[in-house]
Length: 296
Image (cartoon, rainbow, N blue to C red; front, side):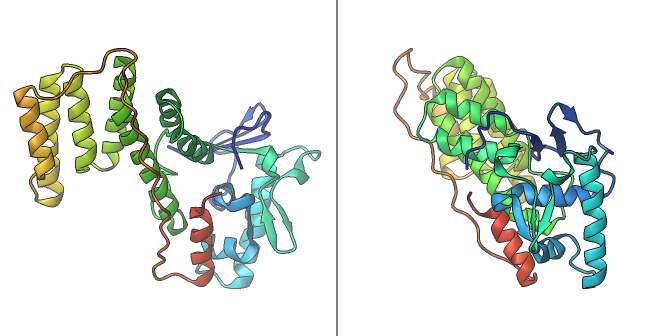
């Protein structure tokens, strides 16, 4: 379902950090008091249809607790989350509804989630112009929930979002022809490299764009950064493609930006296929990770 909602009631931000807004009211960082209450909201915000079976929620958030203790913890967390999201009695029944063993965050038309909005925009951008691709890149404001690095149920979705962003960056870099667009793509490349400094293809894209706008020294400096990153992280030297690009830049063989109206017809790289592996977890937790990673 598209996240381009006209009047969403509950806004949830997960990229670069966790924020919640209900209508015009922005929740303060400590307003959702229990960490488990925050985790339930995050979990359901990423789940298909914004709902999961109660056992899947218990497996994801309280995997080591006895069943009775886990259910008590769930009830306490739900009470805390409901009071924070809907402090008034009139709205209390709209969110975090547990019925027939299914826990639902809310009705889809009531919700907007930034990670899903990015995924929708990235998919649409494959068939649209550079402006749409740049707008999609702007939606990726950071990794998925970076303050939760050890939550196993987030691993695959976080990786998938990174891969989608990387593919979008590289595809847009191949099409950008206007100087302002190139600068925006270069900024996006550097953001992607912050998460993987040894990504050789991203370095090459940055080198090529710098050379195409006449910044030869910046392009050569990018190659030096690539060399250091590869030696530090992988004990490797740049591959043949990177070395050839370096020689082309030195020799002035990289074509400048095309004249206005002559942008090449290059399609964006397709978004990566979903990952499907699960390692050392219970069946319920594996199901949660699969659901959170699945395409809506």
